[in-house]
Image 1: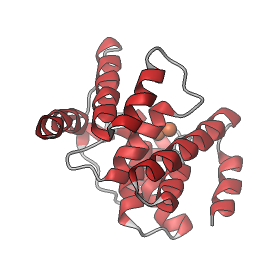
Image 2: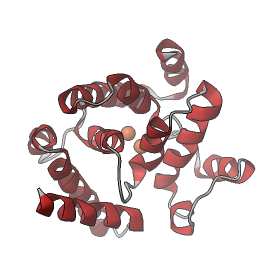
Image 3: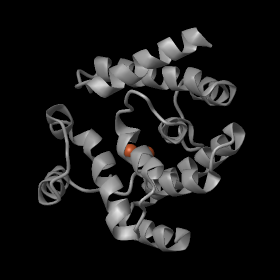
Image 4: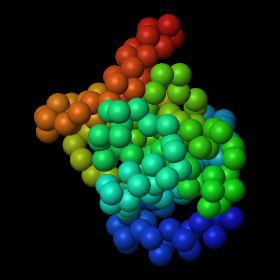
Length: 189
Ligand SMILES: [Fe+2]
Ligand SMILES: [Fe+2]
């Protein structure tokens, strides 16, 4: 299964994206091991998280319509976020993956959401800390991710929201909800 997915990915992803995918796989497997969750599930979710990323806006929207995927209006209008929901559906139909934890981790890696499962948190964070990422603060975030998943995640969401504000982009409500919930969860610790 892993080799079949890899050879399909190599065909559909440009070199840089494929390297990013392999980086996310490595980070996700490490984090899964660190936090005692299934490394096999982390590997599959990471491998497929950007499976639909190279589709055009038209292709993504067409796919959503043809397969009648449930997508809220603000997600539908934000092209950058759509590859999560489409990728999760493709993981199910093209590779026969029915594990809900894996599918949700793929689906919500573009926005986060309330009540994220550990695997979702790991995939969301791995996307930002994989070894090919290079931006101010990435080292600190890598360290935080291993210290406390929720602390790392809060920082990840803060970075995303800051970037979206600075570039005048839409902030999906699930991202705000997920960010705020980290504050509540951290206050309880
Ligand atoms: Fe993505
Ligand atoms: Fe990614």
